[in-house]
Each structure stands twice: as C-alpha cells, then as structure tokens.
Amino acid sequence: MSFIALIISVVLGVLLVIVIKPTTKIVQLVLSFSGAYLLSITVLHLLPEVFESHQKNIGLFILIGILIQTILEFFSKGAEHGHVHIHPHTKGIPWLLFISLSLHAFLEGIPLGTVNSNLLLWAIVVHKIPITIVLFIFLLQSELKRSSIYLFMACFALMSPLGLLISNETSFFNTYHTEITAIIIGIFLHIATAILFESTKNHQFNIQKFIAVLLGFSIAFVSTQWLTIHVH
Image (tube, rainbow, N blue to C red; front, side, top):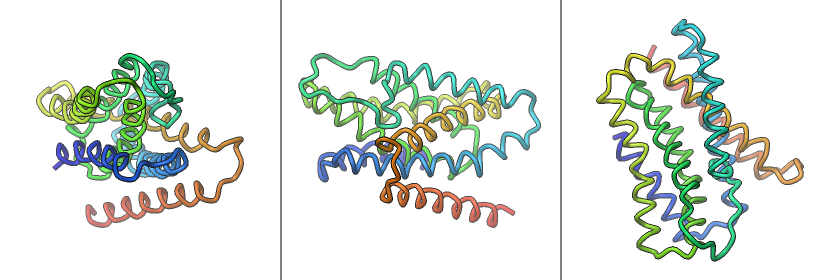
C-alpha cells in the first residue's frame, strides 16, 4: 500500500501538469494546502509521538533535520516549497536540483518503515504532488528529450519507496526510529513554514491561500482525531 501510494503521488503530479497545465497561482495554492497539512500532521501527530518516547536530545535531532533541509535547499533552490525560478530553454541536466529533491524524497520514505502511521504516509503523499509538479514543469521547460524527462521522473518516483524498503530491511533504522523521525520532523517543519510564510507576494493577505491553508489544517485535524478515537 505505502509503496503504491508513494509512486501514485508522483504519477498524479505528472498527470496534473499534462492534463490541467496548472498556472503558478494554482501551484502555489496546492503548495499552501500541502504545507498546512504537513505542518498540522507534524505538530498534532509526529511531535507528541517522539516526545512521548522520553528519548534524550530529541530537540537536537529536530534541529539537525532543519539543518539538513537547509543544506538540501542550497542545491534545490527551494523547489520543495515552489521557489524554483524556471527559465525557458534551460540547457543541460539540472543535476543539483534532481539529486537534492531525490535525496529529500528518499529521507521522507525512511520513517515509513519504522512508524506504522497512515497519517505520515498521506502527509508525504500530499507533499510530493506539488513537488512533482514543480520538478516536472522545470524539466519540461528545459531542452531535455521527453524520454529523458520521464526517466528522471520515474527515478524520482522510486526514491521514497527505496527509503521505505531500506528502512524495512535494516535494523539500524528500527533501533533509532525515534531519532530518525525527529530528523524528519525538522525537515517537515522547515518546508512547511517556508511554504506558509514565504509564498505570499509582498506578505499581503490572500483569501484563496488562507482558504487552502485552513482546509489543510482542518483535514489534518479531523484525521488525527479520527486516528485517536480508533486507536484508543
């Protein structure tokens, strides 16, 4: 189920670009929704879970996650929250962008092998759709062949499932699953806050973005409440 959902999220992002051809405004609204949903799941579900473990220095691992994402964004130029400036007819393969986004996707898949949480899975799925849209649009407006573009997207689609597979098969990730989840929390916090607080032009109030954010918060809250009721 998890493997299929992670791959479908990338396929859906590609299909949305092909069928709908979303404008920058639509991409920003999708990003705002995904950022709000990701932040809500992190605060309402993941943070309480890691702190209830009473492991030492959990806050330190969250800060490490923030630092890791800061480094990744140096290479991705902020593609995780829609800050890639696309220039038509860009020559060459955007290796730094692709590798940083792929590594980010790989890291996201790791906690799925150690934490049995559908909420985390869907948070990653929702987050991957707008990232896929941004990456696919960037590749389409480059001078790469279509076959090369789809090969890159196929590789990107496999990165999160690969992280999940490796974490399932490696005892290290099970032993330190709380610390790894804390690192992922740091990554999520960095991305989600960047989406919510940096994507509004001139920091002016935008009713459409506000509705998208409110919808993301609401769905995440209902999801966490439903999980709490059915688990306990």
